[in-house]
Length: 481
Ligand code: 5AD
Ligand code: SF4
Image (cartoon, helix red, strand yellow):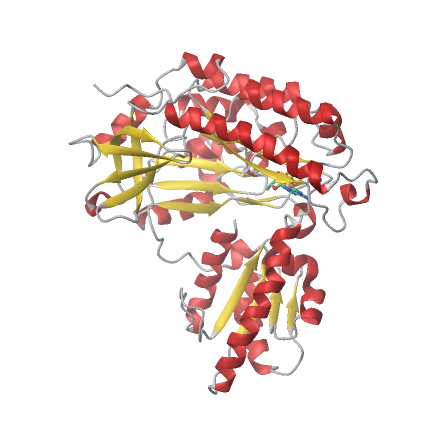
């Protein structure tokens, strides 16, 4: 989401003459786009600001001026504190006000000694309506924000406070943005939202009117329906979405995984814990078995679906038996990859006030055990890919000469020796070797220029019995002949 927001900020700033640079030294403006989700992320902001202070001083010693800005969720949550602790900061703005950047920058330049400009409103107008159309997309895999904010209020999480209430963009705006991304070279689009499958945007009035034969008030669509609509875009080959909540996996969304070939067979579905007691204390509003059943239904719909998740260890009150429940859930489900964190108390959240906080050493031990299990599953999943052929979207040049890297349908990084002209293409790749976090393969000759896209459709829909029954199934692709 922050990567997406940063590109949109650069779109807003372009008419003022600002261009992105990968060289902060001497820049006219530096914006730190920040994350507040865990303490480590927010603390980084202050250490980075110390470093940038020096850069700013050097620029003014040379007679120039550098605007130093802090954006994102740390800005939203700690705006006043930032201006107090770091007077070198000129401008602080939250995630909902970056469409006002031109005005904020003008104010900053005008009031040089006013002590910093702060804008952490939740404005009534939506930034999406006020933003300019996005500029050129870099690369073949693009992000598109469709939903923001969260009404779930998990007791450990700052998102409902920093990003605000749930908001879904209208489907027609999303469709138009997706079309522009594809026209600019995107082959894959990842739909973004803090709670993306809670999406409930207004349906396009044209579609609704055509269905009912009258001009009527548009209804709302869920994510499943939206995915089907976007899949109609020619030239768009892959759709993904992140991040989901188990409670919002409705029937249509589950069905779309089985019958829409452009929706990739990979899903990030955070569960956080496998203990019902902890899930309740987290206010997740589902049990571990509810989650198992959702996974079962997803795999009935799409047998080779690869799963990813988020886990928190050491939530206040977590006992050894709760942690054991989490390990059991991981073993039952089988993940292709996952993210895991030590619980980090966040200011203003209900869990911060719970008395039974867990000792840091216990958290570290549990995290290590959990990560060992998840890594073993990831290695097994990657190993099971060897010898299979799968469509890979070539996204970047690799570190070695003539090396390209891309993503498999299951989000694995795949490295191949290949010509640069394959960048942006979906190419059939035979997997030769598996590493802990990536794969190596070779291009199957003649598998590009559209032929691969057709291959992607048929092979990524091949059923897999191993994934449905075993804890960690391999990708269900055609074996290389
Ligand atoms: N401590 C640790 N991890 C957290 N996450 C969110 N809040 C916290 C916290 N206070 C994790 C959750 C979430 C992911 C984005 O970050 O696992 O799914
Ligand atoms: Fe945070 Fe996700 Fe829970 Fe919302 S659903 S409060 S974003 S963890």
